[in-house]
Length: 399
Image (cartoon, rainbow, N blue to C red; front, side, top):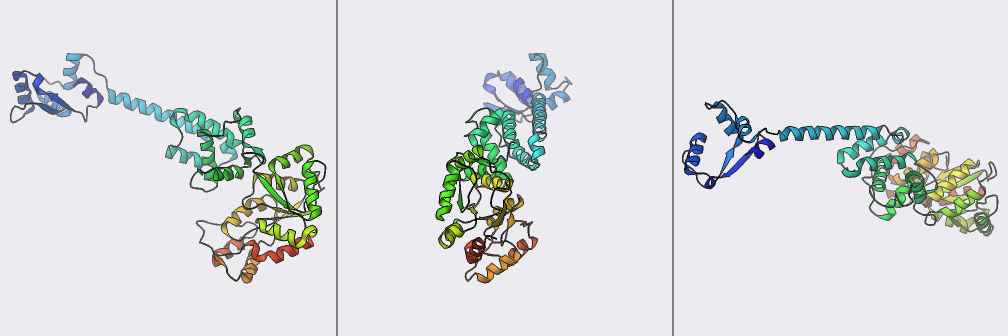
């Protein structure tokens, strides 16, 4: 009875085996509790009711006083649990407050909302939450880091090359990147994780991340320069791995103003293929990002911008195409036939337009605000291949 009372004096019920009591004890209990007949076997006693009966009896003392007299001082387990919970809540508040004050949040304010979601959903593993949060935020503070490798990032930030291969820190970072990318959660497949890391400039290795180019020549020496020159002379597309791009940049670094004034950038490899077939060596320098740009593509485009090249970008007129275009144009590229008028011209050329679903939210096209409005009005896609002839004419003229 003492243990039951200590655990929770407001709700506890206690089962008692009356066979352990003498007949006179059982009869006295029945009379005191007001049972209509003397019960036998196991019975349930409501402790708050028993406490009230004791208070109203001639003893004028409650159950706690009786138990204390019989067994010694009682411990308020409910109060202890409340105090323990209050301490845990205070520690949790401090933990998340420290996370919100991390330099990563100052650099990326959107992390504030992500942290609130992490706390609300309880995705962080409790036993190591403080360390997981600290490590994940340290990694996020170092992103984006164009051209870096996962092992290199892990070594630089966490001190171990395999610290981001798997585990709760990697999972937390990927959930944050997915949150920033408006994805419902971190992808479970390796291809999805690769793309999510790539969105932050991180490659899982130096060979699977590649960039496709045509007619691009770089100054200097070395294998990447020789590969580009040989393929440009033959009018053939060339594919550089992230390792080759890094090797070139480490060995050469493009001198400022040493590149072709304009470099065209397209989304789909069919444009590069058609340009090689139709124009061969007459094609202006062209970089193909092949959908969402890889780490290799982003690193090459950044280096071309830094060296003074003017990038001109064209992609598909659909919602994913606009999502790909925004960071490229936002980083300094100019649109290449990629405005509202160009979209309407493409619609006129399209015999079998592909319907577009209504976008889930607001779509931004800062380089031409009318483009998003016009696409929302028509809800039809215009793929790059639809306007191929016009793109080829530009590539042939170099403008």
